[in-house]
Image (cartoon, rainbow, N blue to C red; front, top):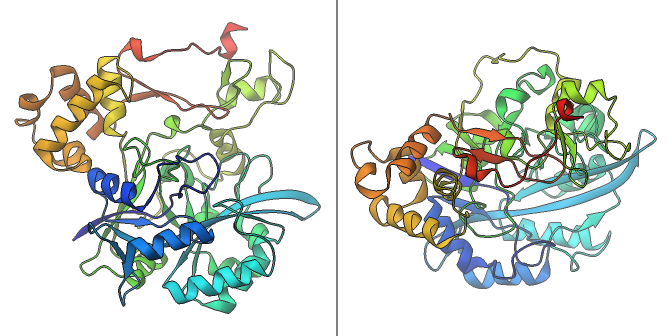
Length: 412
C-alpha cells in the first residue's frame, strides 16, 4: 500500500512558524493533502512535546495517532553551529526517534548541553560528529538526516558554512548517515551527479512552517508499506526497499536555486555568476551562491546521469500554486480556494486530484485553464522562474503570474 510520508515539519514554537500550527491543524491539512504520516516536528521543545503527548496516542510500532486518525512519528530538527577544519560551520539535522522512551532520553541528553525551550529548533555548539556519537549511544534506531542539504546558510553542503562531503562533515560517524534531505532547491537528478552520494537515500520533505496545503507535503516520500511502523519506514530509508519515489517541486521553485541578491533584484545562473566572479553587479558585494552553483562545484558527473537502482522522483507543484498560476489569482485568494475545495470535494484529497483524477472527470469540475495546468503539472511540464536568495520561484503558466521582474546578467 502506497504511503505518502512527510518526515520534516515544525510546530508552533519554532521561529517563523504559524501561531495556529498545532496537532489539530496538522491533522486537518495532512489529511487534506493526502499524507499518511507526518513527522511530529520539534519534539525537543517542552511545550510542543506536551501537546504531542496530550493529543496523540502511541502504538507498539512507534506510530502516533491523533483523535481524528492522522499518523505521526517522532521527529525534530536541531541546529549546530561549530568550528571544524578551521572554518565556522552551520548544519541542520533532522532526527527521527522510534518511541517516546527514546525521545525522553534524547531530550535529557540535550538538556545537559544547553537549552531546548527557547525555539522549536534549538542551537547547540557541538559538531555533527559529537551529536551522532551521542545519539548512537542512546539508540541505533535513531535516524539522523542532514536537513535541506544544499541550502547556502545552514546545511551539510551549504555554500557559506557547509562541507564538501559527508565524510568531511561526519568523519568516522559517516557510516550512521543513510540519507540526506534534498531540499526544495535541488532534486534527485541534481544529486545523482555526485558519485559520493551513491548508496545514500535521497529523501524529500516539506520542512513546513505552516499548515497551508501549498506548504505541508509539498515534498514527500512515497513508500510501499503494508503495515505502518517506525521500523518499516526506517528500513525503507536505509535500504531503499519499498521506497517507490519522492514527490519533488521543481527545484527552481525553491528559495535558493539560483544565485543572486534579493535586495538588488539580481538573479543569476551559475554561468552568469562565474562571469562576474561571484560579485553582485549592483552593490558589488558577494552574491548569495545558490544550490545549482554548489552542485556544479561538487559534481563529478554530467547532467542526465542516473545511478543504477536509483529511486525515481516526480516533479509536482502544490495544487493551490497550479490553480493560482493558471488563472492569475493569489495563491490564498477566494477564487483559488473555491476551485481547490471543489476538487477536494470531488476527488477526496490533493494528491488524488493532482495524480489520479481522470482526464474525463477534471473538465467537469474546473475551467479549461486549470484542467490543462493540472495535466501539465502531472507531466512535470510547468516552467518555473527560479528562486534565489530567499525568494520562492514563480510558476510560469500565464504571464500575469510574474509579479516582479528581476534583472539577469544580460540587462547590465
